[in-house]
Amino acid sequence: MHYAIPLLLLVLTIVAFFAMGRGHYADFGVSQVVLRVLVALPLVVSGVLLHFFRMSVTASIIPPVFPARPFLVVLTGVLEIAGAISLFVPRLRRAAAFWIAIMMVAIFPANIFAAGKVVGGLQFPSVPVRLAMQIAYVALVLLAGYGIPRAASKPRGD
Amino acid sequence: MSDPHRDPDQREQPTNDSDDTSLQGQGPNLILIYSLIALAMAAAIGIALMIVAPFHHRG
Image (spheres, each protein chain N blue to C red):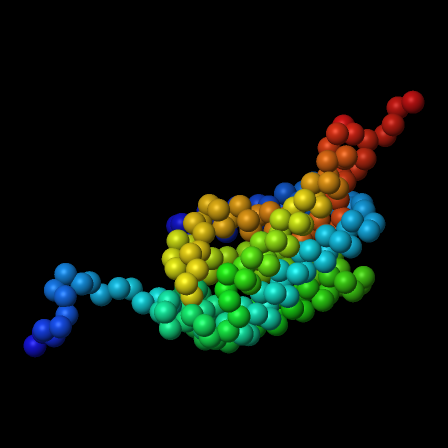
């Protein structure tokens, strides 16, 4: 049950973003590129350094119910790096943002499992703190990929 | 047969495959990695607030 609520809140974050935009998003130029760089950075750092160079630590935070944990570490590492790169490919930008957001939900059980534990000498944050960070990150990724959600703009009555 | 060197009060710790000491020093420093991630996140939040704030005030 304590896995369900955080995952639901993350899904609701994604739903809320698309409900706000309803298919209408405004690009915001250079700032959006800067934001894409900033949201891609954690993916690259995590994908390369955590998933490949600290594979055993990363595998240890995956709940034991998941099979083939080392494989999942490599798979998610490759997906994180691919997602980060795709954010800079115009044709893939939005799809990348969407699938990164979905992946952030899919990998969150590992963060819940590790919450409050000391792994590799590092104290992992509690579920509420980690959830707030994840919600912020998901929102930032969607903002960087899609732009600012702008549902049907109001007609200007002059 | 019990182990005479074992503290009777010592309980079996859940392993979770995360032996802290054995996992240290086998690659890049975790604190450094997470600091980089946190820094990028903080900067991204700052940028996002700067972008969204004018839209918010516009009404």
